[in-house]
Length: 79
Image (tube, rainbow, N blue to C red; front, top):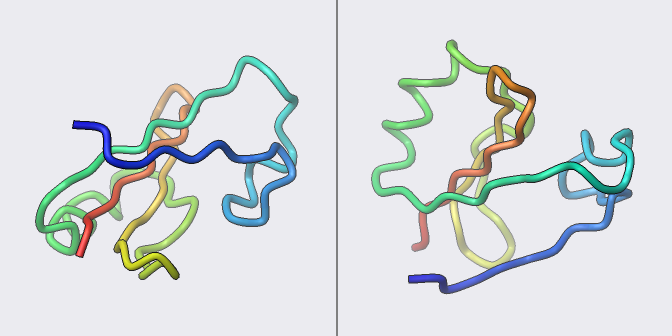
């Protein structure tokens, strides 16, 4: 069930790491989860956090991390 999608510019201020990446050949996965606070606490010391847990201006709670292959994973919980 896709409920929201957003395309970010490579110069996006929302995910600062994107501004230094070349256009093309990059992907970011946006993954909805439940109980994001517990999930964040269980992974924060195991992954490179790109954007810490925060509440967005559109009401989601989310964080971003980089996996061991360099992909950006964005996790969110709708409220």
